[in-house]
Amino acid sequence: MSFSPEPEFVHGSVSRTAVLLVNLGTPDRPDAGAVRRFLREFLSDPRVVEIPRLIWWPILYGLVLTLRPRRTAAKYAAVWTEKGSPLMVYSGQQALLLRGYLGARGIDVDVALAMRYGKPSIADVLGKLRERNVERLLVLPLYPQYSGTTTASVFDAIAQQLQVLRNVPEVRCVKHFHDHPSYVEALKLSVLAHWSKVGRLAAGDKLVISFHGVPRRTLMLGDPYHCECQKTGRLLAEALGLDQSEYLVTFQSRFGRAEWLQPYTAPSLHKMAVEGVRRVDVICPGFVADCLETLEEIAIEAKQEFFAAGGKEFHYIACLNDAPTFIKALADLAEQHLQGWPILRANTSTREHQAEQSRERARLLGAPK
Figure 1 (cartoon, helix red, strand yellow):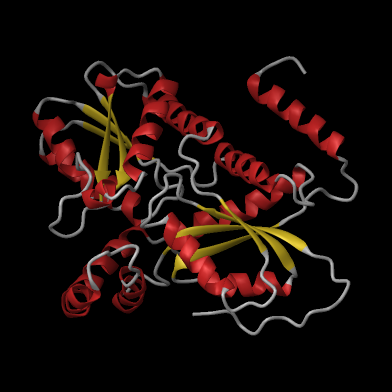
Figure 2 (figure 1 turned 30 degrees about the vertical axis):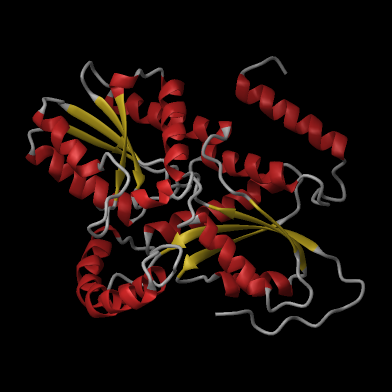
């Protein structure tokens, strides 16, 4: 898919700046047909499945797209809301709120949302931004930890669309934010808010920090994803005051027979229950919006696995979603990467903007104003 025809150039047009949030994507509906279309696009990406095409195509079209859509559609139906896919609902709220947060800081930019697979597509959203004369584009993939299977695929899609343009916008891309202080703070506060409702972990209980898995081969080829997941987990545990015996980083969503990053989430939960761990709290920091992998795979399937093995208490900690702490983190991240571009409102001076930011930081840190 590519751009619609490039808008006609008009001399003297005021150029604009935009922040483009990109998440993975979701089927349009929780039925087999929509899931099949989504999976076909997703699993056809060579960044996602690195098996040679001559080997992969017969598997994809002969088995996966024949057998998997109906089962996966049933899982989507279990988490679908009246407003639609949870991933789409929360991602849309994130884009809307981010525009407001940046506007409150005097930063005049457009904020748009695209999905790497499905709708709204990157091609369609970039076309609409070009119609608004956006000539400076900050691409912010909603993947905190970088992987060639996710973030790099977004960069590929952006580059592919820009190839057809004569007047290419200036582009910046955020590679990752796995250790950004505002992101880690948002995670910490989400856990503390959860504990304020159900109580902190007792001796012997575990905080399980589950990330989406990728084949172990990617680590051997130099993908930093595993290391960035481990760092996020460590920083979160340190922020919460946990020692190494009180938490475990795991990897979920294994697909196929190849070895993936370990330890695997479901078997780890089973083992904990068998060994007498009474309670686990599970958080998924690699997902910034609740989706099939969190609401069904963790909050339903993993919970059942833990209880079946003898566990007594299981809590899933929701993704950051539209939490003000996370929208602030996105605003901090965007502002950091927008530096040097003409983004301030005409009635907002740089000095006023800096003073406003100093007051905001003081408020958040509890320092005297």
